[in-house]
Structures are given as C-alpha cells and as structure tokens.
Image 1 (spheres, helix red, strand yellow):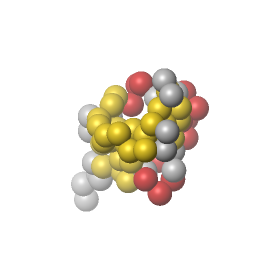
Image 2 (cartoon, one colour; image 1 turned 90 degrees about the vertical axis):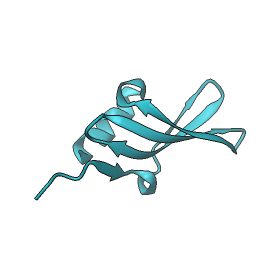
Image 3 (spheres, one colour; image 1 turned 180 degrees about the vertical axis):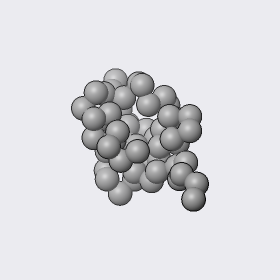
Image 4 (spheres, helix red, strand yellow; image 1 turned 60 degrees about the vertical axis):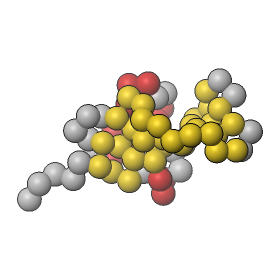
Length: 68
C-alpha cells in the first residue's frame, strides 16, 4: 500500500493573517512539503497559490504535523 501524497486540510479550517491578508490552507503535498492555499483580502478571494510548509506560523505547523 502506497502512502497518500496529498492531505486535504480544507475541512480543518486552518488559516492565519499576514500583511492584511487571510491565508487559508487547503492541501498539503507530503512529498514536496508544499501547501496549496487560498488568499483573501477584506473577505474577498484574491488567488489560489502554492507556498512552502516552512513559511507558515509555528502554531499551525504543530497542528498540521501530526496529520502527516
């Protein structure tokens, strides 16, 4: 049995604030340790992008790591 490479985190509602933007975490790619995120500004969707797991706050890392 192969290990699942992508974890869906959208139902956990993980998000954080940075530079007047709300960043909501959607998926974690375990192989590359990248996160697919949605970026909102003033509750309005701006874009969906990929960021490195290392660039999120430590409190969120601690919550996500056990899920891997």
